[in-house]
Amino acid sequence: MTGHDVIVVGGGLAGLSCAVRLHESGRAVHLVEASDQVGGRVRTDKLDGFLLDRGFQVMLDAYPIAGEMLDLEALDLRPYLPGALIRKDERFFRLMDVFRHPLALGETVLQPIGTLRDKLLVGRLRLSLLTASEESIWRNFAEEPTESFLRRYGFSEDFIDAFFRGFYGGIFLERELVTSARFFAFTFRLFGKGKATLPNRGMEEIPRQLAARLPPDAIRCGSAVENIEDDGTLRLRDGSPQRAAELVIATDGATAHHLLPEIAPPTWQSTVNLYFRAKEPPLSEPIIALAGYRTGLVHNVSVPNLVAPGYAAGRDALVSVSVLGSVAQAESGEFLRAVRSELGEWFGPAASDWEHLRSYPIARALPSPVAGHDRSGFHHPRPGIRVCGDHCLSGSIEGAIRSGLAAAEDILSSSHDRR
Image (cartoon, rainbow, N blue to C red; front, top):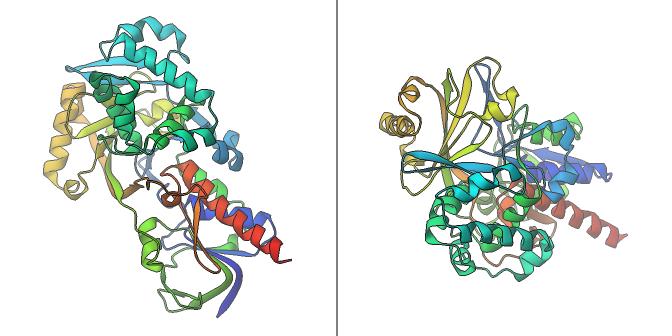
């Protein structure tokens, strides 16, 4: 049996962050990952000169803890424009963050998306959240659905349907806006403080950067854990045992529940991300196009290489299309034809010539936030075992990294207390 100081199970952002903090604090860490490489849900594939992120994702450069943990300059982050194109009545209307783009004030005010009062309320909400501390947001915001908070704040149904269900539906992966208003306020504040970005070499640069801070022999991929025995021994799928003084389960929430039944399994939001090659980009700027006022399949469209040129090596454009849910139908020809038909409605006949590159049906794309969970960021279900991951805090890059660091700090502080 192999002995280690700390074993971390799961090589996603939570597990990598936990392992890095422990390693850089002098602890001997061994990380085991079931798949062929680290990254978890933050992975990027290379295909025909394109970078395909597995699911539409962005990195918010204002994430406070992730920003401290990562070398943002080395990630070569490239920003989206702060705003969106909202599709309404078969047309696109450009709605911008006028605090970032003051020249767009007149254009934004005149767009038939919501009322002038709605746009003034956005400014008021932005100011109130930017002047509030993060802790006060988590402490003072009611544990209620985002939809009910927006209504109570005074936004019109028209603006909620067109803008918030479009923009935040893509963040929460659900248009009903049942996600906690606390998480909405947290993300709204971050969008006010910073920008949505893409690393120029793909989202996988984030876990790759973290993994590079660990010794090469500290990571073992292709090593799925079958079960945890009563004495804390890990039993790998190949039958070999692994034993450590401390154990961190940094898998997704469903796997954590399988290994430790006392950990409640999360519910999941799902999505399908489709990529196409186009001779000409359907958008003229690095912005996200959103579905407003409708219940069709296509939720948002963007051209990643207009944001970050590294996503396309040649002259052709990479088109990213997101559909909420629909995972069970994603592999069918009928589904692809339906998506193509909608893209034709959005962008005209040219969309019929786009080459379909790949589809990613992601059933476990985002854990639904758990109402009322504590903000410690991790669970400690048994002596010597800690559980971390975005399912313990919030479904985001920030939530995953913060959770992993919280578990590591608890191990380090416990070790200090025993001295």
